[in-house]
Length: 457
Image (cartoon, rainbow, N blue to C red; front, side, top):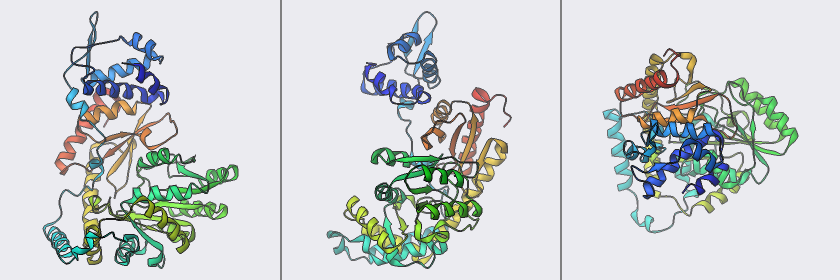
């Protein structure tokens, strides 16, 4: 039974092994290979069998006990137990935890959203859905993209903007395009979906050293001298996961390095519609070298899967269009119809403002419950970057997930191993402020009672 586990553990970091062992045991229960009452090897026996550190197995068993998957007693051994198995099996990384923090729209706005959606679909020529759609060339959805981007790009033209099914799809296409030209530079921590993209595409990458604000310009320059770097990925506003917004001085300094070495910038501005600081985008600072991505997922309607890429030139737009065409034959024209109505009328922008108001209320609640020096948070965002020092982020994240709290360990957002551990805590995904407050108090109790007893929160 443990033979496949042995080979899998070799390929992952030691810090991730305890959680992996837990997941393996859960998978065996789910398959019926293990049932309640089955005896497991002792810590020493399993350590020898798997050829991994004794302390790692000990930590894994402790994690299994805390989650209620196993029980043990001196002289009797360790057994699979029923308590907690069902709950643990149902624990998965849920995208809903990073939904908009807006519980419900105001009555007037809700009515407008519904009426415009119904009208736009009613007026649509339904014969069109029985034919393939050349949606990448649809001028109306490109115009909606220009409206949504607003002043984030300079003198926008329809020939330089492309629609895509969410920012993630745009990133896949851009990485496919730009990795042909060289290595892609990533900050220390980045959007977790990029790990999947990089691994799937086998993208050559390098990590740029960062300080508390973000990538260091001089470090990027040094890397450019050492190797052929084609692009720099940045999430400059309310960074996911660190919550940091790059200052104008840092943006200008990075842009100088990018211009000097002829790189491209992949500007993932997913939270740009929420950021109230009004700092110039890289597309404004360095328009001929920046691919600017913006969409509806964080500030408006993630379920619509709608985003746009504003390209550095018409020639580059054509190159990206060819890749997007290869990734999909056609989008759903009805979605485009509804998005067009919402954006052109301004109701989408109004919804973003309500989302921003809800996010600020949740941030205010978090700040009331936790002391400031433990975390980073943006006034306009809806997630927290919580410092754990050297505590094991995987263990704490799992315990919090078991308690219904959205917590993701920092290793999910990087390729480099770090001695300092963090958690990304989502403040959205809860239907109300009261529900969020209950979850945050549970979070505080877990930190106090199990791991951070010396920390006052």
